[in-house]
Length: 382
Image (cartoon, rainbow, N blue to C red; front, side):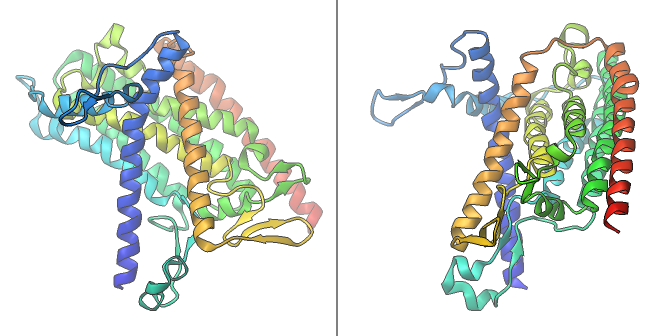
């Protein structure tokens, strides 16, 4: 019991630290990436002075995120004169908590054998192995959509409870937008369920280790290329990022559903947005990019065609899988930021029409074609 608890705590704490680090780092990445695209220097003023010296550690403006965090923690927490106190207080946490909970079912590595990793603890663990996943659930994909749906309640709650017409309009916009694009996300994933025959994320990743016709990695993006594009588009809209940031459009609604929030309550909304960028990257990596594995890679090493096995030490395999997962997630985060600084904002009517009149029909068409192809493949093999 204690060994299981220790590993669970290790995974939980490690995942929270990783997500918080991604959230802080991406604020810097967005600033620097936007500066590079605009031919500007970007953030380069915040620094840490080495004690008793005049040496200033600037590190390309990496400390700006820390300065922002300290500023929000020290700001006064202003509240509206008339507002619903309970709903107003709960809303930031209802938005922030589900973003972290979604990561609980995402596998970020293969199987961990603590006895092999640390031989002195082999007796204590008694040969137990642990999948590198906080909650190893058979219906992990369904849990993701259940948790992500809670953020809709948080945004609408924030807009309504603030007793501000701009906030209310932003909350209504957020609710209708997130419901529309979450439907598209769910239908795109159904194509993958048909292909892999499971809603277990770990089994999906396992089936993506290998090659298609000996040429392409057996990743979901090659089985479902249209679904991959539709899923990423809908996920960016679900996160309310440009070009889909209508719920918080500064030129129209000041800051949308969190206009009346200040200090760290506003920080939770903003931080949740950046962490959700990492969550979208992790989901896309798991569903479409082979997850934590490289082609032919498994928990023993690389199983090459022809029965050749390149064995690797357990610690090397675990570290490689973790680094591969983080690298894929980071590249997807950078790509999302690239889109944010490349495309103009839609009008609100265009944004909803885009979901219902273009993405949804394409999703249904892709799902229908996938179902027919899977049926034909099963008929040919039976």
